[in-house]
Image (cartoon, rainbow, N blue to C red; front, side):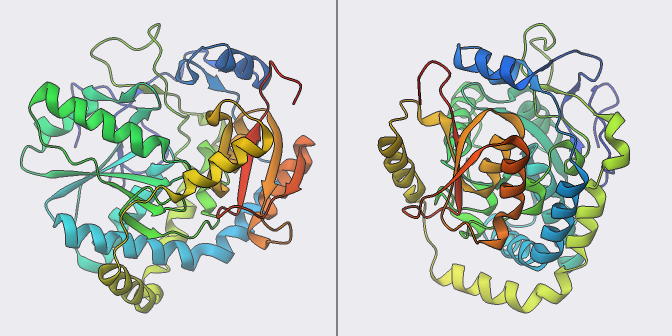
Length: 371
């Protein structure tokens, strides 16, 4: 548990499931409109200094979430069990799950639940911030090392796209180890690794993880994380907001419970997938990045950060950014229903592009060009 002297944020998850090592910024005004935020980001302001206005899902979109949850709950349970088994085999049981807020948080909870329900192993689980270009929250890492000096930290995220967070974690952990004389591992465990960026994964299929469909309402009502000198002091954890006003639309715990109930039925598939990965372990090849470079060349996009591959990242583009167009490998793919619904709501062009391993890809329009 967290030291009583440490101020942390409390979302809608039970503390038995996760403890957020984040400073509560719920009273701060950090939101910018999509237009304002896009202009600021492309003008050089770091994305972590502000927040998008939180998307409130429409009734049609929520129906798609529930439909996708019903369709993919077994697959999520199987991938959760598989990656959890690989973690226990490779890292042992004396571990702390450290999920990367916020997409990693529900996945870390599912891993913790799986280990408890299927193996009766209770592992601590915390959620901390990592920010592209600024690194992992060192204050949070130091807190965890002080609190669990004999345990191994295992980093958890939801999925990979281009691998930007995996690379950021590797860079941050190397810097942290050198600075503090520690020996943290930069291994990143993910549910899905369509970008081929991790060696600890449940699947490499680019399928719809239902928690990618929503923002805070499937992440404990927590915003994405913030690192802003106006609100975050040198000794503070990175910050986030809790959107208590969205409580009526919160499906965070419902999502976790639905997947948890599938674990027992998924055991045969988990065993088969785990055996397969144990015997055919594939190290990261960063194969997905090759597709991104091809897309970059094809569409003449100078900044690779404006290309967001995979179902999870494409969803984020439609919820948080100003998309130029959405590429889909197959516009009849039922797993892309929520993508097509969001694109329709936002009047964004959808184009079939079948020369990629990803199911879809979101392209953000550079504001200073005529693309």
